[in-house]
Length: 95
Image 1 (cartoon, rainbow, N blue to C red):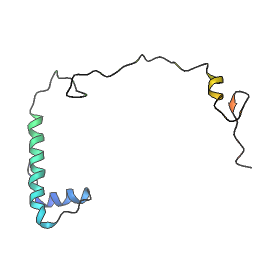
Image 2: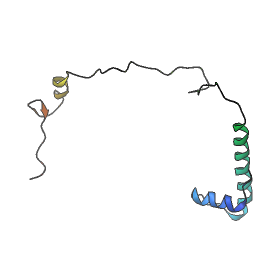
Image 3: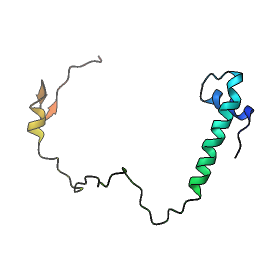
Image 4: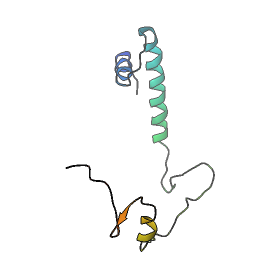
């Protein structure tokens, strides 16, 4: 795919990048090169290849999906400056 100078101008405007008129042909050439490389990557057969987190072999840390929070009302309310009847007490802000 080839990018022309008008398309390069439009891309620069959308990206809010000021590009001088003299630099537009070079920008169009570079954008065309990027798109050409992406087309090459689309030709690679990646069936059966799992997505990677990193180039080094590593596994993501996983934890069991269980509820671990509960029955800690007293411990949570111990941090409150004012607690009443099992709830946080806050000053009235609207009269």
